[in-house]
Image 1 (cartoon, helix red, strand yellow):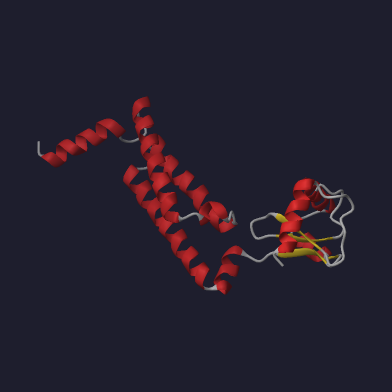
Image 2 (tube, helix red, strand yellow):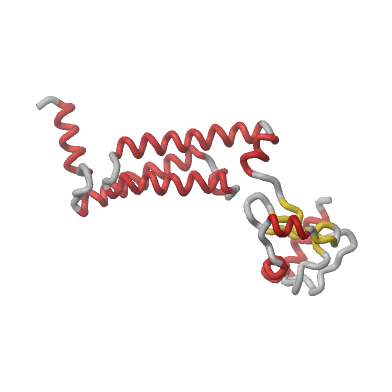
Length: 191
């Protein structure tokens, strides 16, 4: 047996082949998939986690789906790792183009939807965003410690978060918590 045949036999003994895997072979495959995923996500960049847009969520979901096939032996390890590398490189390339061309970025990531602006609720925008008044009020209670979103501009951000920006002359119905007041003061001081 030459060196290559010996190496191939050792890899096959450690990681197995096909779907008939011993428990320890599946554990070895899981460890390898974990290390590969960590490396691939480092290559993909921090955007994959920081932005949380639909585009960025795709890479996380697809990597999980593709690499899980290697762990259980449903697909070859070489094939799943090759597919994972292609996904990560594609994500990285599209992210780089998005960073350079804002129009392309809007196509990929979408635009924020202004649901309430200067005290005027845009019902069409709210329906497009699939938000009810209760959704807006629940977000206001959770983020602003306020009973409602009155007095705030409300924006559904590209990543699905709801942002509240104080409307000109607008005052929230409930006093802000100490934490929210400190944040609002910090924002005002930067203007």
